[in-house]
Length: 135
Image 1: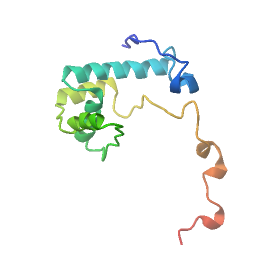
Image 2: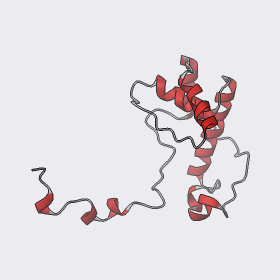
Image 3: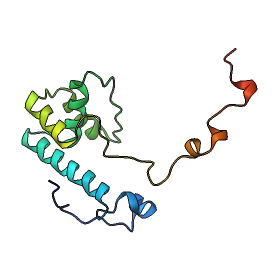
Image 4: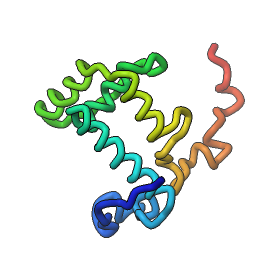
């Protein structure tokens, strides 16, 4: 069951101003994303870590994930993320993550409101005929 989003989202600034349809919590898809995040934040807090640490620990625990791309801007952010690499998630925590975001589902579609031209323009998906061979 979906929880109520605890904060309103300011659609007049930042990325939300550029693409309000991706951030508007009145849109069901966005509300579902926000609900999943709130549940994951609660789960992280219940095991004594932050959401970024939970994300790193999940990556380490999942055999199908070969790497995690992190983007800390500061040393404290890096140090916080690295704590997640040392965190061992038990089966109950991994099962709860799977309940929140079932395996094989995607709560985030960054191109939903703005499909890249490389997907919509056939000419951008193919090299010229003479340039298609590797040799």
